Image (cartoon, rainbow, N blue to C red; front, side, top):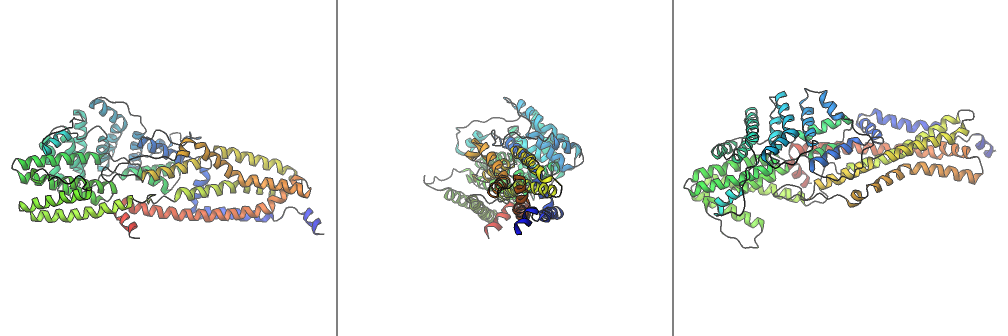
Length: 591
């Protein structure tokens, strides 16, 4: 009797199909998961949000080979369209100008004029237009100055500095800029200082341009003026935030992964230029002290030290490290006297201590006890920050707010990629089971669904993108030299780089795994029970497969909720990190 009932009603519990649908509907109704769910469904068909970010990072960082295969669906100029339709949105216009500039190929330049012309094609014309459209926003001028230091305007007078300090030089000097670049740089610095008069950044940048143009008296005046400013703000954080807003508006993906990748890939060439400025400035101070003008030398040293302290107080790790270095440079050769030789095996810390102690002794010797106390206090603060950053740099892998996200996004995508085909197959079985003769058509419908899912699976590239995003972020957070604050190497996982197809094959196989197993089980049941395959397939899909699909939907929901929580935590951490990275790292270390 039981056997007869089972044969007459092979459908099992078709009403169970409602549960996974309700679970997915619930994810769409909850605000914290709605955007994530929609983004992950879209990512099955189009990996552009992450692939485009990686492509732009590769261009920006000079990485010639990325392990991402060509995108199946390009963006079709969508970012440019968003920018074009928002002419009064400063944030989007910043993102559009900088993104377009970084993606404009550079040309080989052999002269300063050619270098400047290339800069104008990439960034200059766009940023000048931005400053004219938003004349009261100092950020437009700050971005122009920052990017012009990538070879267009820069202090390159190390031979002169070395000659002042040790009496001879093994180096060579050159003027990096030209009349046109100096004029543009000077105008931007002047306009920036006019709109942000309390900011040391603009007069400091103006000083390096004036030194490059050999207008030393004006450069020294600019440096002294910078030392009187109460803050340092280079506006570099405008770029990653603007880029993130543009990506979110363009592709509809709101993830801390995109936000932190923008933050990590922002170019900061101006810090190296300011370091070069500080080396020449201390040489000028040494010259003044040797010529019997100690107060002039002290004023120059103090002005750079004040700017260095403001750089530390800006709060980013790189500005703090560079500020540390600039502060230390200003203690060299006090009074114009060569430093006492140290043992060959002296450590950097011992050299720094000896240099600091000699400078403090010099200050007290010329009656500058108050200045000596200030230098000692700020030097102690510098050492505390330096030790904090060095400790953070020893962590492998680096502590990055978004670090868990590629893993949890990958888990979500694997669950979703398996859930949707099963849900479609089970739904087809439930619907056709209610139609007379529908059971016979079920294998054909299931085959069509499976083939369609297989086509989508072969086109998917989310696994490659997420894997590469994790590797890139890990490498951007590693291998930083505490002096130069520049990446020392860009290590890409060998397997992903040399064999990106391995990730793609694994992505396809795992995404189709549960669907294939379901069909194999249905075939095995058909052979074992000696019943028609359509009947066995309908029974399998409406019983065991439907229960498993419901459990899979519940698992995906739990995973997505976890991802939403981690996204919120990462964004909160990024807010704190971008507001003051030093304070953020101090808080992390205290845990």
